[in-house]
Length: 169
Image 1 (cartoon, rainbow, N blue to C red):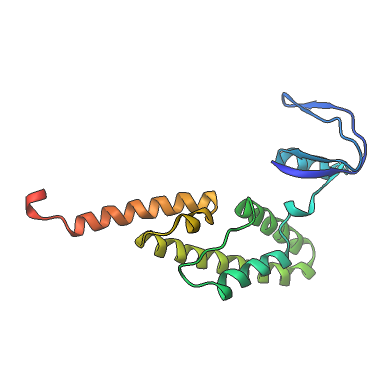
Image 2: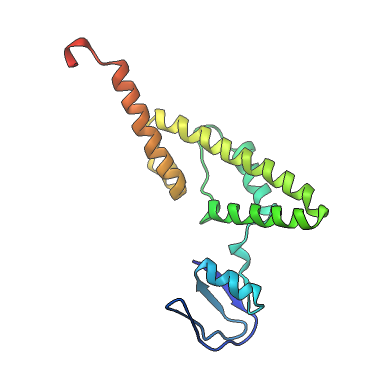
């Protein structure tokens, strides 16, 4: 689900067993991403500012994650960060293929995104080997929580094979 702002009035329409609208100009609505995309393409809506990831917001996250925190600290990401990042990178890549002016931004954003992901991945792996606080675990996104749980399971299984004795076979 994403937030959009209606750019004009639109009567209710049915699409794929889903009713869209009615939309009133200037009002904010929460709709599925695919619906928002179609409404935006048709000129009926725009994304709310907090829905989109920008180069500035990516740069701020990068700075906070890589410069401000230690390996045992992990800050919360904006809600739905990874889907937003994926959409932002796809949009930048498309813009760069149409207009060379976007190529530099795409390269820089890719570098920032990889740094953020690698930094958080390293922190998650480290956290899986030490019992983290509940506060730290709350800072993980859903995707990161799943990764953390998987890594913890793998570490636990690996440790149990190391300490297995002949008697426990």
